[in-house]
Amino acid sequence: MSNQDPFYLVKEDIQGSLDKAQNKYSKWQSLSKGNAEKRKLEVDIEDECKSITWQVDEMSKAVDVAEKNMQRFGLNPTEILSRRKWVQNTRKQAETIMSTVDSSRLGSSKVSGPATATSKLGSAVRQENDRYINSEGDRQTLLVRQQDDQLTEMGDQISRIGHIGLQIHDELQGQEVLLNELDQDVESTQSRLAAAQKKMSHVLQKAGLRGQICIMVFLIVVLILLLALVIG
Image (cartoon, rainbow, N blue to C red; front, side, top):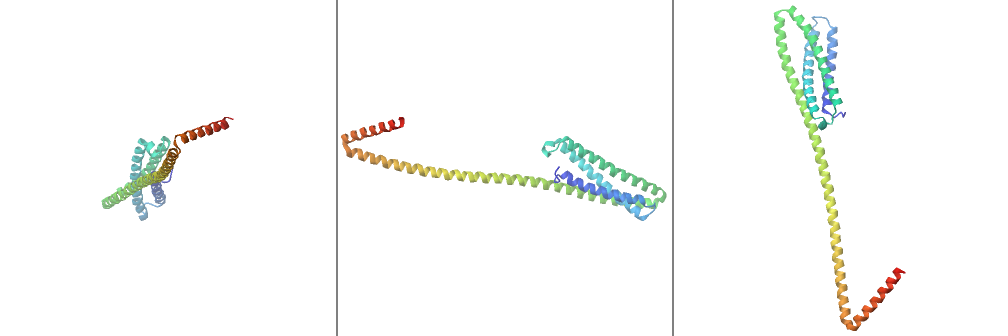
């Protein structure tokens, strides 16, 4: 499949985000409870996973549309199945990481008391706002890429139509030149024929009846000799 396929361009971005989330998750696991860096990583991991989940949901919708129009997008059932499996697997990985981090953070909240819970609620609101902004930005980026692809395809089609139009124009010009040459040849032939007829009429009038008979006899003899040569 071409690297210019919008699905694979977005897939690459999502995979990069998932790799970052997994790296942060691995580091988070290695830190002890109560560590300030661990709490910061929890927030980052949750943001990453929520953004990934949203993007994967949008990709799932795109796969549904592609499945209904496989011929239009040049796809086949095997490719559709592969994309759907990737979507499901990526969503599962992101949800697993986020679920583990959330469970650990909820366990810490029960011990920390009401003040910490209020602080975390404010943090959650901010995170949700940031996630929404990021997700909207990702959605707009995907739409812009799809529009760019459509405009590129349309530009290629217009270019091909323009090229065909130029070829037709050149062909018509060539035909026009040939027709003009044919007209000139016909006019020249007609002029020569008219001149020959005029000369012939003048000769016959000048020769009189006897002369005309002699000419006819001569022409008949010449014709007979030619036929004899051809047949012989």
